Length: 348
Image 1 (cartoon, rainbow, N blue to C red):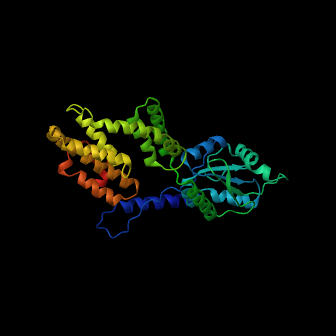
Image 2: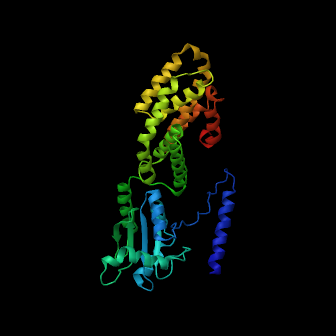
Image 3: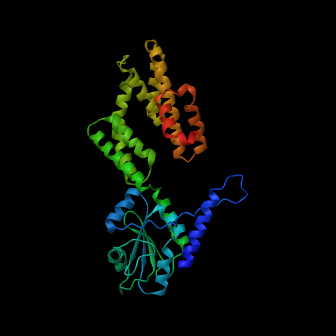
């Protein structure tokens, strides 16, 4: 053991020394390998885990093993440090249930309690004799219905788990990460509050932002249900945006119309906003005042396109738009300054 440790330390020192060599050196470069990736096990009551799966709109996956049995022990060990499976399970809420030890490297203490919960909730009714053939993997819809049971006493391949997850995720329409859920909760709460207060502009922005992030799951469902009433109230505001326009409120009115035009592309609201934008731009009273305002909105349009392209994974297209935004023309605009601050790495 000590000899192996010494060899590992020596290898690490060699790797570090090689990295430090100049580029002119003929010696090959080397790096210390990254730490082994583990499955991000979730330890919670089933109802809590299912709520998490519903928020993310992803499957719940339970890996169940029996203690002191050869096949189960092999599968338990297989789950430890399984980088391939860890990557597949990014799109799920993984849990481990067993009356024995957790997988190697997993810091779990409630897996024995989970074993009873899973058995009573999904297994007992289907096994009249009380026998639960393990190991088994249960792929569960976030609604709480079992989508597939894999293994039933036989070793489950990682590919089988991956195929089942892909099939269910396709049915669900796409999930989100835990980090994104935090943003969606804030937007949902803002949308609810604004709608209650009949602040149609804030409500429209909040619910539109939810739907820009996801089109499936509980957050999208609530946003879609809210939008008809919100859009009815908001449309009235847009219709009134060219009434009683003054030099004092011109910037606010024009900026709102441009925002609607870029965020509601292809919709009736875009046509309405575009019509009003044209009316304001033709009004001789505001021609000079609109020049700097229009520049700010041009920059805002480009930044919106940058973020839309990044969301679609089109990084080259986003960089191209960022370079436009970083040009001298837009350097002093709020969007130009924000782009340079937030996307400096992409502009290098």
